[in-house]
Length: 519
Image 1 (spheres, helix red, strand yellow):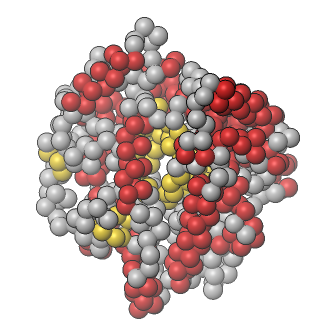
Image 2 (cartoon, one colour):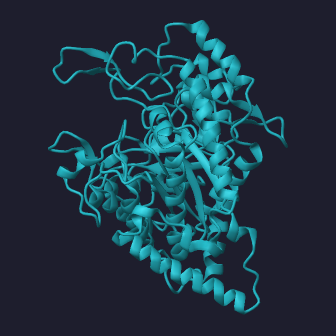
Image 3 (tube, one colour):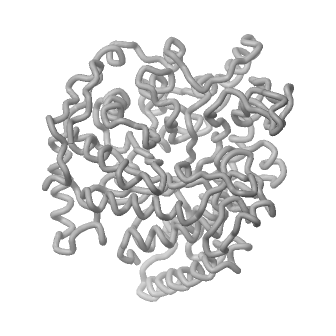
C-alpha cells in the first residue's frame, strides 16, 4: 500500500515510503484474547514502552504552528455547520454573560480524564462513552432530570459488566452540553415539499417545530443550554459521589424496566457474583469501604460545534494558568463534518488543554488524519487524542486498517474507540429513522477483530443510548420490529439504543473482547 500523501503543512511528521501490511514486532498488543497467551504481561508492557520511546514529536509547520492561538482565533478561519444569527449584538451580549459564568467542569478533573484515556491507549483501561444523540430542553423538563439519572445508571450497569471482563472502565457521558447537531443540508422540506425552512440544528440553536419562528437561530438558547447543563452536572456529581453507585449495594443499581428483560436477568447474575466477591473480601478482612467502591469517576462530553458558546466558556487552568481549558465539558470531539485542517473547529480545538476526539468516518483519508494529529497533538501527548471510528458494519473491515497502519507508522499515540451507531442508520419501511441492533453489534465485533489482526488496542465504545424504554432501534433480545417503532419513538434527532439493548451490547462487547475476569 502506498504511503499517505504528505501535506505541505506538515513537517517533522513523516511516514515511510510504504506502510506495513500488519503489526510490527515493536507494536503493542492487547491483553486477554487479543494478546497471544504465550506473551507475558511484562513483555507486553515492554513492547509498548519500546514503541512509544521512539515516537516522534509531531510538529505542524505553517500555517498552524506560526499562528498565535487564542480562544477566539477560530474567528479568522473558514467555518462550517454554523448558524447565522439575525441579531449579532444579541449574540455578543449572550457571550458576555457566559464569560462571566462559572465553569461547568474544572481543569483538575479534565487532566484526570486525560490520564485515564492514556491508560486506555495502553490497554490498561476501557472507555465507555454514551448518551443522547442530542439533549433536549423538552425532554429534560418532561422527565425532571430522571432521564439523566436513568442514563447514568445504565452507564454504570454497562461499566460493571465491562469491568468484570476487561478491566477498569473510563465512564464518559454524552451529557451536559450535547445540544448542537451538524446537518447534511442547511434546509429541510415539509413532507409535501410545499415549505422549505432552515434545518433544525439542536436546541442550543433553534427549535424543532417545523415553522418559521422556531427555526430562527436564537442566542438566548445558549443561556438555556448552559443552565440545563449546570443542573445536569449538579445531578451527575450527586449521583457519582453520593452513594447511588455504592458497589456494596450493587443490587440496587438497576433500571426498573430492565429487570424483566433478558439483559436485566443476566445482569442480576453479575450482581450475585460481584456481591459474593465482596462478601469474600470482607470475610478475609479486606476493607470493602474504599471510596473506589462507593463513588464513581464520571466525565461529560459533547461535540464542539457551536464555537461562540465554547469560546465563552474557556478558562485558564487552576494549576497552570498558561493552559486554556474548555470548561463546557471534560472531553470535546470534532465531528466528521467539521474536521477540516484549515477550518475554525480544528483551530479552536488545537489550543485547548482538554482531551479531544476525532470522528473517523469512511471518507477520512489517512494523510488527512496524520495532518490532524500533527496540528492537534504536536507533542504526541498520551491521552490527548481519541480516534472515534464510525464506519458502518459493512465498511469497517476495509476502512479501519489503513487508518491504523498510518497512525502506527507515524508513531502517534492515540486511543481507539468505536462508534457503531452513526454508520448504521437506516430508514424504516414505516418512515422512521432507525438502526438495526445486529448491524450495531457487527461493527463492534469488526472493530475488535481488526485491532486483533493489526496488533493494536481496541480501547472503547461510543454509543447513542438512553435509559428510557424507547422503541427507536430494531432488534436485540427484545426483538423490536419496525412495527414497534411508533410505540415510543421520542428522539428529536437520531435513534438511540434503549437500556435493554445497550446493556445487551455491553455483554456482547465484553465477550467479544474475550477479557478475563478481574475479580
